[in-house]
Image (tube, rainbow, N blue to C red):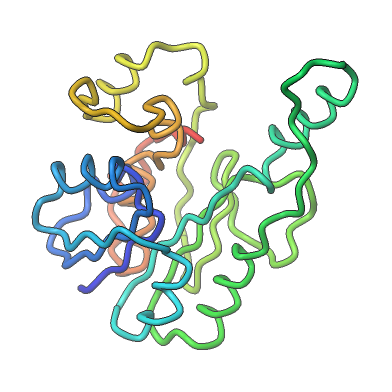
Length: 216
């Protein structure tokens, strides 16, 4: 199975995938180095995932894409609203929601012949295209997810980076050049990533319903 893994980060969603041929696209070379070290058999592309999707989607059986979420997230909106009430020098300013999210959904829905999953956080607005909800995250797919996963709320802001490294199976101590907490927050729990891929493959087992957690 040929998979395109976009906005790949350090590879949380990909961690439990087996018997797959993966091309991963990540724009930050320091983050891509972590991914490459953990998944040395994957093809790594350092570049713009949005453009890579448009130019290459026809070459894959399954596409997973996780476009940037800050301009859609409830937390991002709350930060803007809270900061507008004070006069601090560093303020979060309102931004237009990044509509690359819906561009990718529409592209895959109407042009792609394989299976796909578009992942993002639950937004501060009603979705423009109805997703499947797992925990605090939205998933747009073109296949059935017949079994749900119980997802515990994220507590990464209260934990130490080392604790989350151990939970996800990463050691970032030797890496530099990126925000490690953010890289961990951006991970989709490996059990959820496996569950969704198995659903795309129409492989349903008891392990698919194992409790997982999303960290964004």
